[in-house]
Amino acid sequence: MKIQFIVTGWHMNQPSLIDGLYELKSTNEDINVFWSCHKEPTEEIKEKFDYEVFLNGGEECGAYDQAINFLNIEKDTICFFMHDDLIIKDWNFIYECINRLNQGFKVVGNCRDYTSEFNPFETYDIGISEEFDGKAFIDYVKPENRHFFDKSRTIVKVRPSFICMLYKDVKSIGGFEPREEALIPPTITDGRVHYRGSKGLGKFGNLFPALVCYKMNKQFGPEKITHLSNRYLDSPFIYELGRGQIDPNNPIT
Image (cartoon, rainbow, N blue to C red; front, side):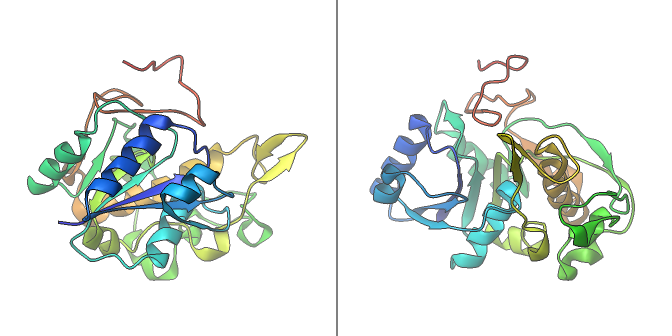
């Protein structure tokens, strides 16, 4: 059984994650760790891990997709897609996720995210670039994946901070979104990081994961999606920082 960790490289400052991943890959020949970086990594990351610096586009979904296109992953490999600002409380999450997959689940998230209605034909007046002005959400999807999107539906969501899937199931939904033309870095104005027509990163930072979750729901069914916790951001195994910060409304336990 092979295990592939793909970590979004941005914060690169959580010792529990870095040290644990380094120990895992150093002591297990069947575990590989790859940092998909959207900025130049620290010297520690360069020394300890395989990595690549990609165009800073698509946020974590872009980083994950760039990584799987770069790597040669076998179909039965268990993949862990992770933010690098996770606090790891218990590495037994690996065994728990494998157990869930063996039970027949297709997607394992860390914490409960909000179920919501998603309409792929809704539009943004101001897109991520001028090419996407007035375009519908489905227009951000890779052409080969547009067939998944047929109607508005209620979707069970998994936060992109942590996703565990078999690689063959990742491939069955066509990987992550958006399409290459939408891999546009955010803009910095007076120290404020944002996308066109928005005050911050939430606009497309929420859209791209929603597109991926829509495909998961359509391909596997919502009953095949599970979470390690019903809490938001927190589980017995992992706490998900938000942009590198603890959420005061959802503290770590």
